[in-house]
Image (cartoon, rainbow, N blue to C red; front, top):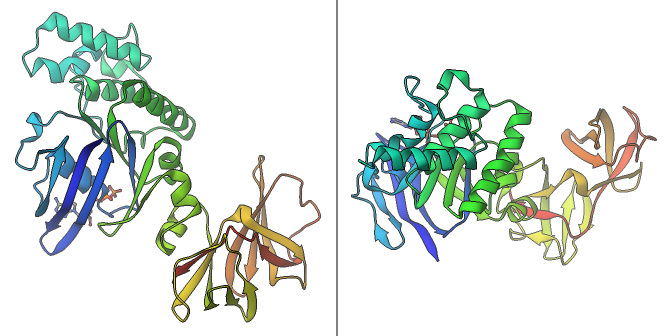
Length: 348
Ligand code: ATP
């Protein structure tokens, strides 16, 4: 069932189009990540959903009901802002209960609900503390609990974890996802961090310059990027200019490369093209077999080893299990190959 539906949603600021004709259906209970570089329009899109921005064109509906002219406080949306916007003069429980008290709910009922939510976000017993007595991660949890206070139909979060250090951030990604799964609330999170999006989302929406570039499950956008922007933005991708000779082969640096039926080809022969290959799908053989490349840097990352190579001026990254290629060192010449079936040919 579709919970949230966007039709031709557009927002212009003067002659700048921040959100450009976005049409999407978000299934009930799903976790969506809006992902894209700074300035691509993620926050503006979230604010359009919340009713905090008025669209230049298009509409938003929830469970089939048009929301376009419904003011933000009447939309049953919960929101967590990047700044958190917690009230320092209120206790933790009063912060969480705030959306209920402004809706005139009785104090005892609101407090009970706040305590339940604080338990959900692992802050049981902390209701009487002040915000300044909490750590960054605990404040984040208070903001999440407050966003859920009204039992929202849709939960909207703008870069909710961006202020946290790397370890806590990874822990909170898992917690937020588990909380969302327990509650089953349709959730839309803005992030510029692709790892965060791949960790949490059922569906990733990749945006660039106000436009949706691809909508898909995390593994789909990773394995089967719709275009070179998505391939380059999600994970590490090796992008090599090439020419599609016919439906079953391409020419790369003057060498002909036969394609496998499982390789994905998204452009036509004659069109400027790039070959996209993930680091884990590259193979380094002896010099003379495959494309010529030179090792320029080796990064031992503990759980894996990354080889940075130069092929004809293009930087290529290859990934191996630790110690799998202890034979290689900087400046070695190798033959670069790609795993058949894992290659994607995209319009340049
Ligand atoms: P970030 O990750 O940096 O927050 P974003 O993807 O969330 O970026 P938005 O904040 O949605 O991007 O901004 C999209 C574009 O719209 C930007 O070019 C921004 O400068 C512009 N923009 C956003 N809000 C306004 C506004 N109120 N007035 C004018 N321009 C705006």
